Length: 215
Image 1 (tube, rainbow, N blue to C red):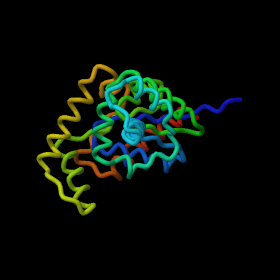
Image 2 (cartoon, helix red, strand yellow; image 1 turned 180 degrees about the vertical axis):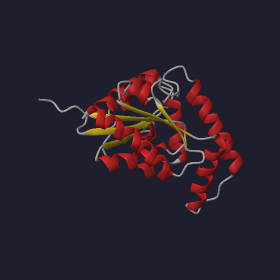
Image 3 (spheres, rainbow, N blue to C red; image 1 turned 60 degrees about the vertical axis):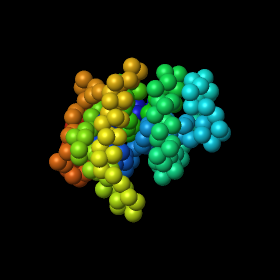
Image 4 (tube, rainbow, N blue to C red; image 1 turned 180 degrees about the horizontal axis):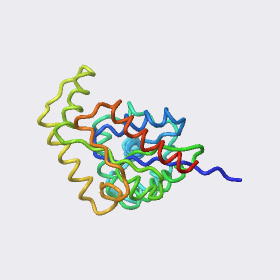
């Protein structure tokens, strides 16, 4: 007898709060969590560490297939240069296919999984019983990132961050392969004027309703 895994797919643009929300949800329900963006960053870091080119799709695909999803270190992988490298390989179809396969294998873990990223509800786990699309205005997202950097004792330029957020949105939403967009059956959570606690409670009510129907 096989145990059916309950999958929660969470998508949205950068700095919308989906990562924090996903971790809270996974902890609440005792589910496994994967920030799929880190899989691209881990691939990019492996390429950089090995001195390999970032424009060779075959090489990048090989590295992507070797990435270990357990123990991805958010602090290390959050570095700006790794993010820049990740954005270059994330547009490669072969890399995306390799990582999507790994993400789907992860999503099968019992008793349940929470995956967050850009294409979870649309591509990675289109049959997930719960799909959330977490968003916020570009200004709010830039302000959050700005405040986060200042909170760590570093300096930041709000205008530069704002422009970076808008550029990232254009790249994510405009790419030909797996563009960022809400799944047709996703629940929209706009966190522009919502605390993480309020967003969590809104998400919890959606998840609990589906869990009770599936019980």
